[in-house]
Amino acid sequence: VQLQASGGGLVQTGGSLRLSCAASGSIFRFLSMGWYRQAPGNERELVATITSTGITNYADAVKGRFTVSRDNAKSTVYLQMNSLKPEDTAVYYCNTIEMAWPWGQGTQVTVSS
Image (tube, rainbow, N blue to C red):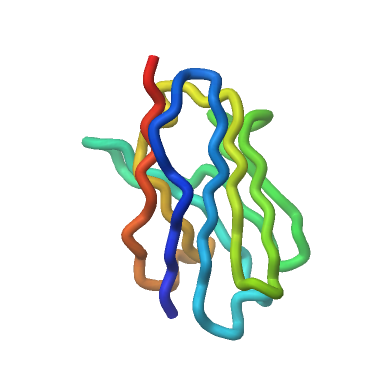
């Protein structure tokens, strides 16, 4: 299984980005997926999850600003990020909630103040 995250970039405070993460493998539709992020010097943290049936959950730091969704037909999970803050700057990754797959390269999100 391979994970390919994309959609990151440089935005100003208050801006928006939509991240995508495509997974190879036919079992994607059965798995709960998560978006994770890692800022320099910090541990990787879980920011959002979505079950196979679309139930979502969010870390307090992003609740109300980020929305996770998925398209099982495309084996892709998305993260819509609004009202971005400088503290959202990090490399963003997706993986199963058990972190069972090899980590992909991630996508860099940089929010300028």
